[in-house]
Image 1 (cartoon, rainbow, N blue to C red):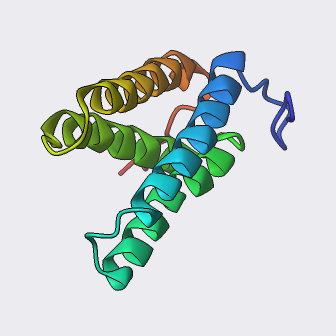
Image 2 (cartoon, rainbow, N blue to C red):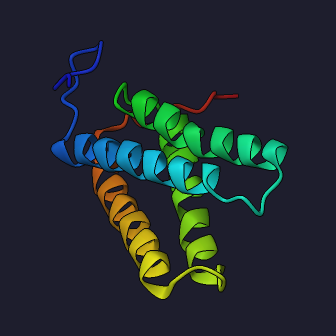
Length: 123
């Protein structure tokens, strides 16, 4: 993993840790969704593709892309809500998934200082 982005800005360890957790989480979710036989094949493929976006956003976040981090914050927040609302799944799985998503949210939030401040146009 790079410790600096292309401009030489240091990538915080919290962002690298969040990216690693997100990739592992996305892989586990993709396997779980792919194994659900009650879903139609098309829906399973669509859900796996949506979950795979987490890994893509995590890779871009390591390059200090603010849009990728915003996407990850949105997807992880949605994961917390979905995990707590999935009443058909076992409680331990739901709490585990929500817990992992909350850890990622905390790691991402503590990494925001490394991102460049936006510049607004004048006039």
